[in-house]
Image (cartoon, rainbow over all chains, first blue to last red; front, top):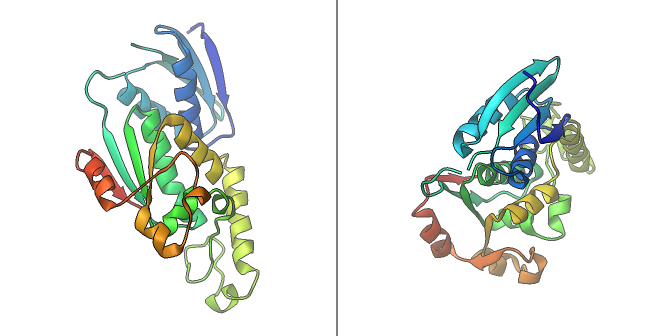
Length: 78
Length: 158
C-alpha cells in the first residue's frame, strides 16, 4: 500500500484498445523507476495489463479493485 | 523494453466495412504498444480504411448479416435506409463502450509508427489516386508485403 505514483492516468469509461495505448504513451513519458497509476473500468483491463507488463517488461507493482474501478501501479523499467 | 529483437506482426486488411476495419487497427495499435513491430498491407476494400475521406464513412450492412444483435429480416434489410440505420447503431454501441473511432485508430497507427502499405494493384483496379490516401502510407505490391512478412512472428489476414 501507499505507493506514491509519479503520474496518474484515468482511463475510466474507455475500452480496448484505448487503456493500453494511453498507458503506453504515459509510460514513455516517465523516467525509469517512476511509477504510473492507471485507473480503468474496462473489465478486460486486468488480463490485458498483466499481458502488457509481461511483454514490455514494465513491472506491475500492485493491482486493486474498487467497485468498478481497476487500479494498476506500474513501474517503468529500463 | 525487452533486449531481444522485437516481435514482428504482419497484417493484411482486406475489408472496407465499419466492423471489418476495427480488428486490424486494434491488433496493430496494441501490438506497437507492446513494443512489437507492425506492418499492415491494405488491399481491395481494406484501402478504404486509409482513404482520407472514406475512413470517416465506413458502414456496416444488415444485408446478409445474421450476426447483427437486432436481427433484421433479409427482406427488410434491403430497404433504403437500413444500412445507415445499422451503421448508426454500431457507431453508437462503439462510442458507448468507449472504443476509439476508425480515424482515431488510424491516427494512433501513424503516431506509433505502424508501417502502412497500400496495394498498388488495387489502386489501379479501383481507380483510386495516391493523394486520396493518407500521406503516411507507402504504396507497394505483394512482394513488398511478403518481404516484410517473411520475417514475421505473427501474420494475420483480416
